[in-house]
Length: 551
Image (cartoon, rainbow, N blue to C red; front, top):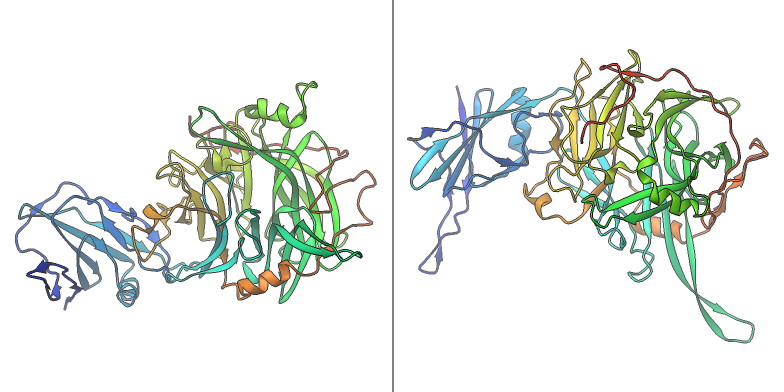
């Protein structure tokens, strides 16, 4: 027998100074059949969702006088009135458990005439998703980031909480930055992020005079099973070794320039960048590559910890009369990154020669290599040039099958605008990525399921309790990362570690004698020499070695 649930509505109709009482929604008895599905936001039509995801609330965008939605799952159905369809969490749980297909019908009424739009389905996968994600929230103002925060969100409901905020230990005038949060094997108890800030200090001299001095103090906060340390080293874009207390970083001298006419607004570039390995137990830094003409960035370990993947561009200064920074600004479209990897011996901490994984030539640029937890797939971002594709509307997600050595553009996930900053779930069944597909300004997190044949389902936007929340939210989501649980250290405790003692990272005795890289947060990156060995690049399914999706 079919069970029908009628959801009560609060009718806020004012009549003679009185509010009307509650009424229940019902399916209209007479209606005409529409020729299209309703327009909804977020667009959840035809998506596949995890069995443990929060309700997919949505708003109906069609202009009408009245709205009724019927949701069916198995032999049960729910009727909800109103333009904003907000599903009770307990009802949503029943819907997911009753059937692997949830059908949605929307009725709209205009001028006393009801229309039933074509229905759409939401598929429920048996594959669960990690219960938490973390991300930075940052305003797209380019020059200010006082309200930047590091947040975490439970994907099974709508609970969001602060991990750390950049205004806790500073003020608006001084500004600061929090970046590069990362975890070992998705474990929130093994976490790190980088902090830059200014601390005001009163110094009392021997003569009794008081001097007001502002100190720039930054470093990397690392939590390893409850032991929190602040390390003084200028290291960013981390990746934890999956089996050992080691973190690979890139050390970057990064700047930004602004376009006068281009709609992409901004260009972020590295003028120097190297790779280093940090030993948490010994507090030692081991440089990997040191060449002033190579820009190495965005390292990522394979699941076995046997290879370190990264992107690198070879750039030689073209105009000797200008600085390298100005030369790169003038020739920013000539910088193209390839994907490489280096073997790693855990016993000796020695790296092998670099191997070419994806050759972009001079037609495109690949960044952010991310290996699936089973080691089968390499997901990366491909754009026309440069390394920070979050600012390039040419950027798309590409997938390399490391077993078949074939690469394809993930057209089923990409949009006409930016896709970047992607991560795999711990079971390898889901990806989350940032996209500017709505307006080209604000990044929003999208989630997609990996099918058995290596394709992805249609991505869906991170669900919110208020379906219009992201339409009014004036901050971008930056670097979404999956977690197996929440970070439990309170923001005030992170603040205490931030202003506490700092451990100075030291150079490893195994470091090459020619190495001279950044070991302090106040220094800039310097470089020496390296040799290079390349392997055969992976081929795309169209037979080429590099391409761009968007023009």
